[in-house]
Length: 384
Figure 1 (cartoon, rainbow, N blue to C red):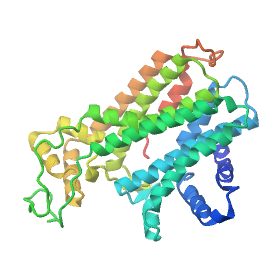
Figure 2: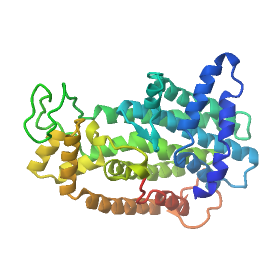
Figure 3: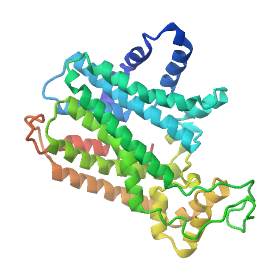
């Protein structure tokens, strides 16, 4: 579904740059050149699944073959999602101290290396602010102009939800800092001079329910609800039942997607994922730690409590050793099969087979099953 849209979607990126920077004053040339460099580095080099999913959704729900002008507008809205995603990732890497993103040096770190300090904060903010400019330019003078406010509202709602999710993610961390130095041994007695005192139940909040809440707010809204609902609105879907039912499926896909991300952070191939895992050192409430704490013996739980959330290679290794002892890769594989089956079951409840006459009917109640199944299958047992 998305692969067939790849070349067409990619061809609009130059239009994005022209809209955002084509008419800027010569006084801004230095900043303009920097922002173009940032956009080229951060925006088009990922999988672009969110942007293309918006276009694919529109094509599946629209009643008649759209004109080239309408298709351009829809593709530019898709690129607006990619701009927002890029801005979030720039800031996420700065917050997490990540060194790699998509197989290349994280933008914030690259700017520090090049002597620009924390300009990456401004660059991430600029990418997000550019979203509104691009949406207005894409829709305000097009046949879809009456959808402009709805789309802006949707983007704002999903961005706000993602910020709440990011806050839940960060505030739920149990990362502790080393005071000064490291004795290099994760499981022997540590000098109080170097290691802070750790409470016996500091991982008590790391639950599967909490993981699911973070996934809903941090991931599902902007990665799945935003592109699909945007595509539906642009295709003139009016049924609140269809929109609500689509969201219910997309939230479950988002939770499944986040569990995959958490697994790949520890067990993924860095050459494939394009990033170095940091969840253990950062003390994230990930699917892996939440599941491990449900399965662990008292001795294993004590090891996790002593080592999780500490930026020390021996501590990270001690945590992974417990994960391996619990055979989390096998448990995750079973989880993935169950989660996928549950998603397909939910799709059965809210969809029907075959072509629907008019998906723009305000009284429509059933979504197209083939489309939702294809969306779910895009992520089944993914490796990056």
